[in-house]
Length: 84
Image (cartoon, rainbow, N blue to C red; front, side):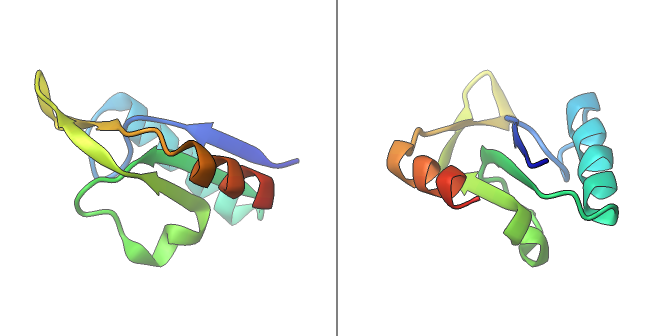
């Protein structure tokens, strides 16, 4: 089984979705379950775990500056998922 998870928020952001997704990915890593998280690029994201993540270019969302909107990169995303 392989999992591809799509999210607009992730650790180090502080909210329920980010915390739950961080717990889930920690479990997946601990149990050697292949996974890939597709999400907007965010400041403060640790480089050492980048193998499990695909960061899409993003822009701040004007109503919520702490949230980011991903800019679709269809070819790169298609390649990433097919490789995964």
